Image (cartoon, rainbow, N blue to C red; front, top):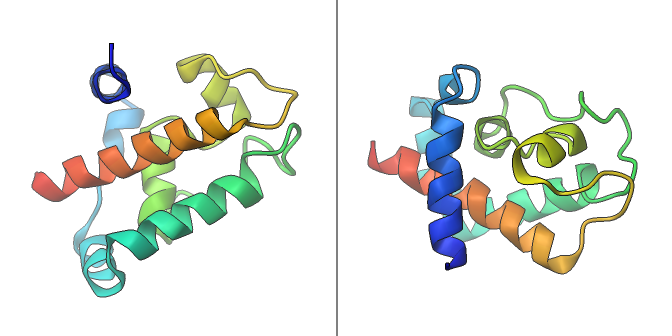
Length: 121
């Protein structure tokens, strides 16, 4: 099974959650993405993951990701990549240790896949 398939299946499962499916990108988000471009948006996602999620014990874990203010924040909530608790519950990525390169890549891919999917809606 490919990573793309795994991400597609996970996004489908997340969309069945009332809370996760409530997150949508709005007009301002799309305008922002258009203005900065997808490569820059992906760079922002990587920075947010590195700074707020990848540590073994992130500061304010469970409260570190705002609900608005950036398209990546919305994507993190929609994909359950907003905190280490959600990463464990939905993606089985253990808490209490730093994310490895593969896990960081997976988180990046699912966030960007969700954003791409939103752009097509």
